[in-house]
Each structure stands twice: as C-alpha cells, then as structure tokens.
Image (cartoon, rainbow, N blue to C red; front, side, top):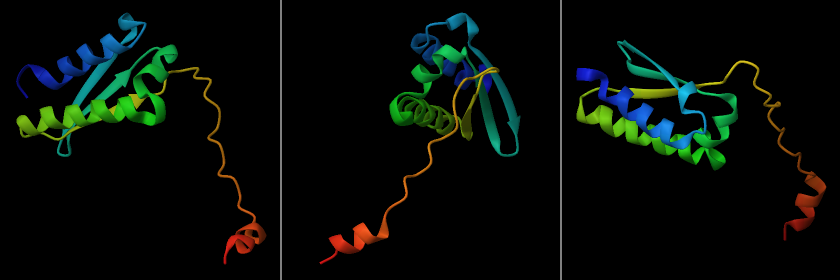
Length: 106
C-alpha cells in the first residue's frame, strides 16, 4: 500500500485517544495473509484504546478493514499487551445451579 495509509490512519486515531501519545508505536508487517498492524501503547492507555466491552477497538478494526478494502488489502490490528501489565486473570463464568433452573421450568 503506497505510503502506508493504514499505518498513518491508525497512528492518527490512537494518538487522539490516548493520554500518552509519545508512547504509541506501530509495527507494520506484510505477508501472504495481508497487513498486520501491531499496536504498542502505554499500559495506562489500554482501557482507552480497548473501550467498554471492546467497542473502541472493534470500531478501529472496522475502519482499518474499510481502508484495506479500498486498497485491495486485508488489514488486521493486534493490540500488544504492554510489559508489566497488571491485568488479572479473566473472571470465570458463574456456575448455574441446575436445581434452580429446573424449578423455573413450567
């Protein structure tokens, strides 16, 4: 893709979202599967970039796919978790008491 419009677009969007724009770094790799943009940001900005229930990240990925489609390329975004991240393990799904479920059936 000429002048890496996808990378410039992603950098512009992300720097507008984060509180530490100087820490934003994007690596662009191209292979037979398409273009992969790896996004490196400050760990304090992860919540801003991902958004509530991943909505911001999903919107950015959608916009990148549109840019890729205009240039006949498949563009994917990988948000790299920063070193020293303090994110805990994912919450386990709550188990359902089958007796309670059976009582609710009519």
